[in-house]
Length: 233
Image 1 (tube, rainbow, N blue to C red):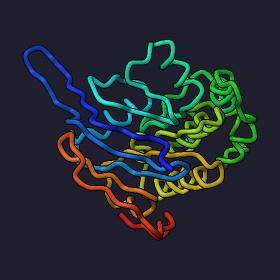
Image 2: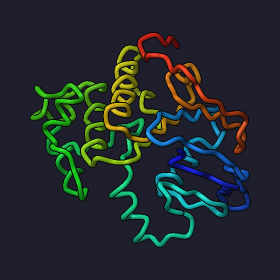
Image 3: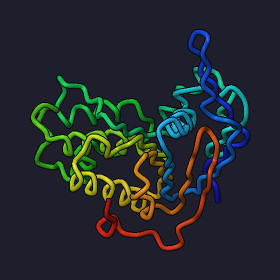
């Protein structure tokens, strides 16, 4: 069963006399409760696609149905509710509030959710049970990304969107973060979409979508996804 269905989705960005056709009528599906990776070179349309799925950007035309809800054409009030209730976001740069502890960052996100998980328990889940009272400046990059993941997971989202979640991390820490995201997908039965320029991580996904210049170049199902520890890049 597909959780996301995108049909003929188009997006153009205009800057003065210049126009960039970011998406050229793409058609993709994302299976429910699985890990999908969208990859491609810079400018392929990966982040634009993710931002439209996450209701942080609007399509010019086409259809983007998530969990049975058509996003294209929704009011800003409806989009805010969708972002609050359905989606958890993890970005390349952690975007933590510097004046809040790890626990307070996660609790702040929990307060915005209708059905949140326990903030302390989620921090333990991501391996930060002993770092709850630390501020972001007192945490390593990997630890900050774990807080960012906890902040997304505490909302108990149906959909987790990750934009280059390992881009600012070293190799070993990146593998730990991917393992955490993959385990969260499996344990919480979430639909997870990762956008990454690193095609070497695609063997861990249940489905892979490759974009090129705003179009779908190819897509395929991994019948036997690999464990993150077995993937090299």
